Amino acid sequence: MNMLRLLKVLFVFCTLALIGCTAKKETTEAADAKPIEIKVVVVTMFEIGADTGDQAAEFQLWYERQKLTQQLPFAHHHDLFLNPTTGVLGMVTGMGTANSATAVMELAMDPRFDLSHAYWLVAGISGVDPADASIGSAAWAEYLVDGDLAHEIDAREMPKDWPTGYFARNTRRPYDPKKPQPDGEVFRLNAALTEWAYQLTSNVKLDDSPALQKERAKFVGFPNAQKPPFVLKGDNLAGMTFWHGTILNEWANKWVAYWTDDKGNFVTSAMEDTGTFQALTYLHPTHKVDKNRVMVLRTASNYTTQPQGMGAAEHLLQENDGYAGLDASVEAAYRVGSVVVDEIANNWTKYRDNIPPLKP
Image (cartoon, rainbow, N blue to C red; front, side):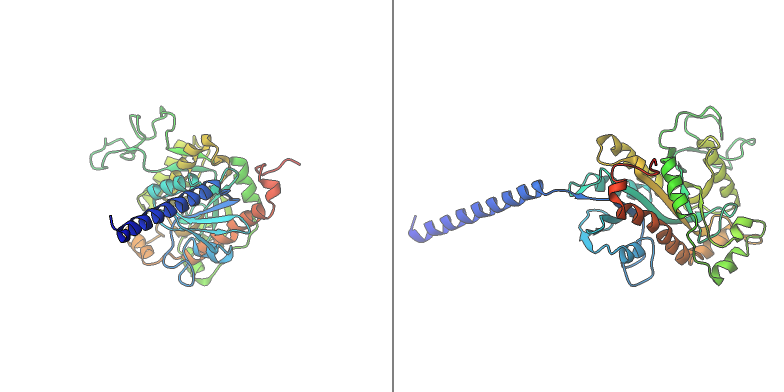
């Protein structure tokens, strides 16, 4: 081997050795890095365009007003954003239970973060039952009911004495009282924490507008639908199908009552929340997360039924052209949810080891 070739071989060897040492050092430093302690995870489901400066959906106001300036790569639907000063982390899961469950699971397993004491606030828009509230309103849920886990027979083929072809798995008819123990069909959040969040925010003033007034005036015979936006407690039905209309709204009320043994009341419809909470329930025994620190806030962008004198299909297609309450519901989610986020983040020594409501 001539001298030039020998020098080339030695150069390559030294370079590879240096790269190996550097990689080993970086791996060791990453392993030794202390995880970032997160105080609150704000879980949103979708954004329309950019994260700032255009039409706002669920994430944008949190990004802007909570100063979530530190972008953290995340191998899912959307990167994570952190305020390193306050310890508030924002995420966008993507729509549907598959996205929400996998995104939350991935975050909870991420070694960059310490989520063992973190509170989780789901803050998203929803449909609302006009029997309970008006668009622009904000509802804290205690029960999350899944609208997908079921048997179904097309209504044209179901027995003539059945009210619906949709019925619980391992039962013999719709609303069979002999239902099995729930296995993903219903979840109950920490009732005391939900009540605390509601009491803390019940007097938050929500925006009203001529456009909201015009829309809610159509819902004659529904006093709550005609009120200005307000904060309430009401339960959520999660389903991957965007359903609409009087008949399905009646089913939603019965389905929630059925799975909660008449303790829950259907108020809001969305897609993701049972997936989110299912993931956190699986993770709870690992102590990486605490499922007792989860809150779900859904704000009303649209009604789940059509107004008098309009067909269900006509109303649904009209809403698909632009939810009448989109801007109001996005603002309500931030305005109500941020009260809870700020209370926890600004008083971390109080809430880190003790879940509210705190004993005197």
